[in-house]
Length: 183
Image 1 (spheres, rainbow, N blue to C red):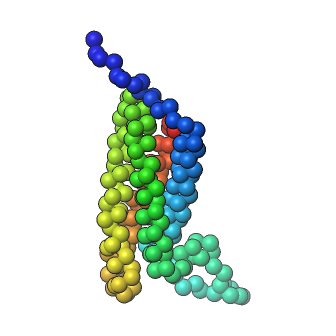
Image 2 (tube, rainbow, N blue to C red):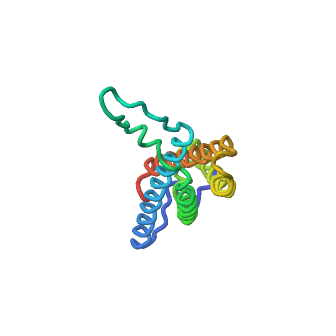
Image 3 (tube, rainbow, N blue to C red):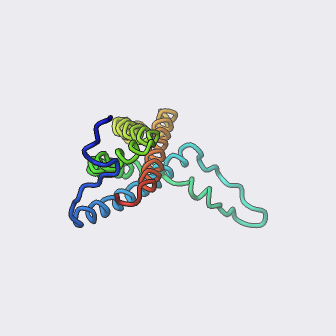
C-alpha cells in the first residue's frame, strides 16, 4: 500500500482572512499591471510591424482616418520606458505571489492529473525570465540606436516581448480561472 500524503491534494493552509484579502488585492494589482503592459507592448508592436501609411484625401473633402490608422500612427519610441517599468513591476508582483501559487495551486493541478497546466506555467516562468533578459537589448534598440537603423532587430525584439507578454497574460488568466479567483 502506498503511503498517504501528509496533506490532501487540495491543501490550502489555514491562514487568517487578512492573508487571503491581501493576496487577492495583490492579484488584482498584478492583473491591472499586466493589462496595462499588454496594451502598451501590443500598441508598440502593432505600430512597428504594421505602420500607418499616408492617406489620400477622400473625394470632395479631407481624408478621414480610420480607427486602425489612428491606432497605428503614434510615436512608438515613447512607449519604451513605460513598457520596461511595467514589465519589471508586473514581474516583481508575480514573483512575490509565486510562493503561494507554487504551494497551493500547482499541487492542485498535479493532484488532479492536470500536469499539462503545470507545464504550461513552467513555460510561462521561463518566458518571463527570458523577457527580463531581453529588456536591456530592447532599451538599447529603442533609446540608443537611431530609429532609422536596426529596424528589423528592433521589430524582432519588440515582437518577441509582445508574444511573451501575451502568452504570460493568457496562461495566468486561464490558470487562475481553473482553480478559482484568489485561491
